[in-house]
Length: 552
Image (tube, rainbow, N blue to C red; front, side, top):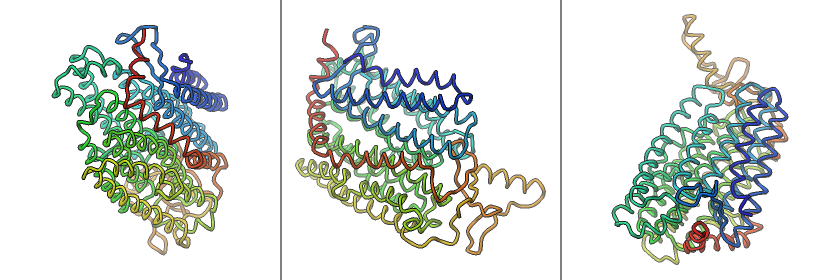
């Protein structure tokens, strides 16, 4: 069974080569390879999750023992994260296939999408399975390279700017990470997690706290917790819908996973627990207040993402069995539900011509299926019973009450307020985009939606011929494109696409699959809670992980 551990990393990397070789000449083969490999990764992840319930699995690549060799470890936490992440990435891939085929995007940028996406999946798996700090860093860098390609597909101005911001922030965190790794190796002579768990006890409190603070900073940037989350609302919304979905739903949880792993395995004792609780509260409140102020759906969802990361940090900051178990439940829930909401946002954009809520309306009548696909995850993320969002929030609040400290009680109150404001936010989206009558300026079926890059080019053309760039408006003062088109929505590669009352069936099916996956956490709430409780106990015990990695 240990031989299966490297496959979630190796299979996508192998498929990347095949996908690059196929290119645009063999589009169907490229799609088949991507779907087949990710399906295989889902199956392997499920097997690893079940097998890890009997104890951690490990493999030393090249049969080199720590600290020389590359160690990959699958325990309950990493097995669960692999299963959820691979399932979500498969659904997003199918969604992107439907979008690409509907938009007839057969050019080189879309051919690059599949290899970049597979590399991203490999980087995520590498992060979840890494048994040492250096390979955790390698996983981060793999994700960074592929992320930049995916964020800038099509080369439009907004996407290049957003991708540049993302890369600059990521490089800054990478530099801090490298310095932390160097200090760790200089102080202990290893970067292997199991060995570090034993050797950190011999270090001075100052050195250990410095390393812990640096690692929390790196993972906090990746997770987009306050005050290092300002980059996220400006980076994600400009990307294509499937890219935004997988980034928002999954990549931020990689940072949360790293916090869970290092805080329990390397830094037991919760020395910085109060700091984490303060950060969690600030993320919740400031994030949700930012969401309340938004009228663009993608930016609104980006701020709710920052807010709900606070719930997970809340559980990590409590650092007890109930808090860790609640955090894991909420990570699993949020990966799926946040991804679903961004996929739905892509469908809304295709249907209404924009994600600006003031220009949308009437979709409850004109698009009932799309309305249902939004309503279920919206109620889920708001924490309405009996959905998994309610289960995760309840577990975290009970853990806070059991903790009994003043700060924990403040977090319970902050969690309640954040949940109520989240409900307000999703109800606002429902009222504006779905429940009210269709506004006069909403794009009709067949409207050509052009990119911001196209608008900029048109403005330059008008300026060149001696006249100022003037944007036409309809009778209600809403900007329109000549011929009735309305700004702004684009395909995966940044090209203009056409609105339609009936989104492609493949995109609807993929979104529905993520909705069902989110609902399955409610149906399987008992087994999920039991599994996460055993995972939390294993993380806090540490012994099974250490013994598995260091056994002869």
